[in-house]
Length: 161
Image (cartoon, rainbow, N blue to C red; front, side, top):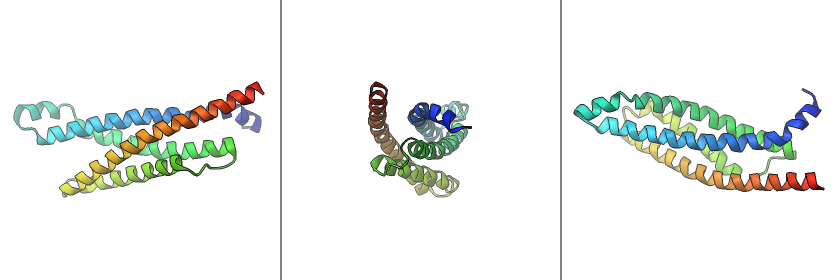
């Protein structure tokens, strides 16, 4: 790929990370829903439990959580890379640190999964970490919109001037 072609993609690259992250925020909320259903299934008895088991919530929670882990890591790498491509530097600030924190917490949460069957306290840590992730992710969404607005303003100013 030539540099001219890469330069032509630059405006679009700026929006790939934010769009991906909004999709992943929705996926995180869906994963939370599945986790709540897993808990409901585990605590249910009798006929309600049989009905909940049919939803295969544990399997879906595990699968979606695994996909989420992979995509959040790739999304963070992509965001940092696009920032570097567009500005020639990595912007060190709260958005970056919170994003890296999210990646670390998601990886730690996933690493706890094999231990959740034998130690119930590990499940509580897993849930707590993921709630912190959701909080950070919500904050990331807000600061990300501010960054996108700044990029759009710069693009508009560059095309007008």
